[in-house]
Length: 321
Image (cartoon, rainbow, N blue to C red):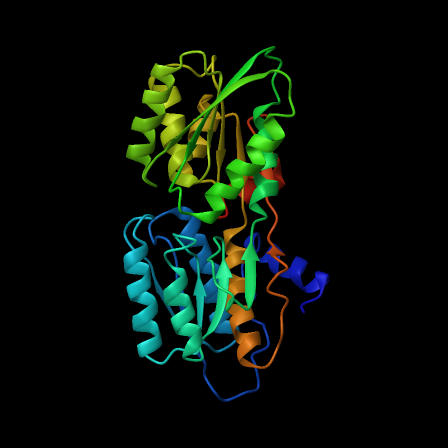
């Protein structure tokens, strides 16, 4: 297993440019790794790819990256997995859209000798060798702490989540509800599930706010739902009435934080997920063993409107640059 110091050093890569001095492996064999993720469009995934490409360069890996157009299309993910296996890849670094519906494709890949690394979102397979990403239940509780950081005496909460089949979204909501319901001020929690697009999330969030005008806290659970929910708050001029908490960071959510529509962001470390995922694939292919039951946790940060201009938080917020 990698040491804690090694993990800390890798996590810092999200904040610093690569020096170009990383030692390359001595082996002449060039391994082939396929990264199959939920989407290729958002800043979150682009940061994952930056980390993955850095690791592939350092470890002399032939890396391919694929993902569907939408974060609901697990069938296309399964097709990409099958195509990767047929092409002869040695390992797959995978983020599952569906905890259950992606399992058979991963099992089939493992049956043909392909090593499996999961990042970000888990899959229901016993053949995963390494799991890397956010502790999503803890991140849900972190979002709840940010949402509850208000002097309001009564709280009615709206949650804008994404695909119900996605494990990380489920876990974030579990953690959020567990923590929020410990606060006696919480009088109700309402949830809608949106497509992982900014447009659908904005529409669903706006409907939720109209149906329940008593909502004074709104939470989005990934980058597109957070943008959509924040836009719904801004669109109904509710910045002074609704506390908005989101996940992840891009130009839009940062701008909305400055304008007052977003109060806090739970920011993950996607660069580290990509880097560590490819590094773990390399380790597996060279005989290293991992405890698949133990998550290799990439930590999160809570950035608020009050602390967003701190130097360290600026680095977190703008890692996508």
